[in-house]
Image (cartoon, rainbow, N blue to C red):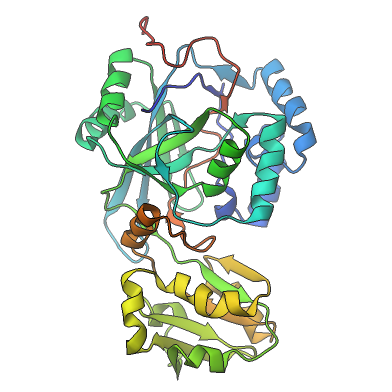
Length: 383
């Protein structure tokens, strides 16, 4: 069951920020120049200073406590790339889920990333970025209630990526109960935040700060995350065991050549020679169970080793291959059905295989575990 939280929020203008995967180094540097930016808590550069930073924010009244335990209605309004004239709005609920809740992951993690989160949360058990969770449930009731709240949001923020974020607290106990009952028998799937989920569980914390949205939602977009591997050796023979390589037509960008093709990827060899790689028919059956990105790792990348870089933007990876530094692989979009199947059967996808757009923001609210005035399970009857 989802629980309301005793949240800390910005007293005035919220200093929200994209999550790490959606944040360029230049953006991060600019945002971190603000001493009250939520990134100082969400992704600290110096975990040793976390406790001092948090206490200073409280002392200087940068943050305030919500008057009662609350859930939040949160919406993201955006346009899909390549579509004109139609906007999409994703609506969900921010709250707490018990760590032992039956949440299904779908993606492997990176040890270095997990280590950094463990260091920070061990020093200050404050969650500043909700884990995006997809859920079954009676969403018709939740969406209708949330829309009525979002007519008058507490905060509105427009991101550089064109996404408009709105959020507002739901203090009313009866409305909280309606949401809880609608999700009471839900099945939960992690969309984004696997590293945070693992870190919170490893440290023995009790609750996860989550942003829950419906799993049956036409706004769910998984943006391709491309690969680059530093390998001095030729991979052509290994690739040709599984794929038919054809020189790229070069009339359109490589990522557009493979767009919508579940069985094809783009390849840029050291020196810049570009190909489309189409899976040989005898291997098509593998796509019934595993997406192309997982097969690429299993058959190619995990076999040769080496550093693997990932990026949503293919240009920098293509340039690196053109300079002779390694091989670039341009991936197609990944359907949600693969995510659900991987979660249900416990067969994890490679790290950074999925990038759900848009991302939830850091700094919408803060949950400090152990800093409590009310029992989290008590009804806020006075609301």
